[in-house]
Length: 222
Image (cartoon, rainbow, N blue to C red; front, top):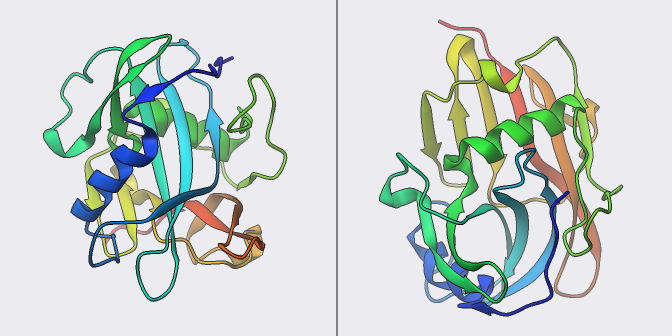
């Protein structure tokens, strides 16, 4: 299980995201974000090497608040083969030293563990407490796969509101970047969906809402 250290980060995660978010196609603001952390969860790396965190941040810089899902990985060395677009930045961790922070959609460890969560083989972990499951994160799965070893990402595409990971045989993993409150039960999933991950976050007025974080789809090929 990952250990969450009570220590310093320079720069902080919020500072890294404030600089990085405006470069994303799905960022809906027009200037510098004003971010607050609104929710999220963690997953464990079976090898104990990579930190995996799904952060929900709310930007209040515009006329209406916007909540974003930002999957991040934290590594002790650069991710081999990752392009410049995958790197969010680097930070100095008070216990672990320099950490390379990546957009988790480009990190195969995060993708594999997210699929394991969809399939029910791992449990979501509390964002702030070590070795503590997060019961508020929901997931569902129908079918027989794919197992992570079979989900070879062929393309990663950022859209206006989501990031889509495409694999062979018409399989897609759709990560909502701009979050919308709504049902996150299997009955609410779009056509072709075979699994999902959903969870809660907090609005600026303190109201807790839920919505979809990720959807796995098997779409018929043309």
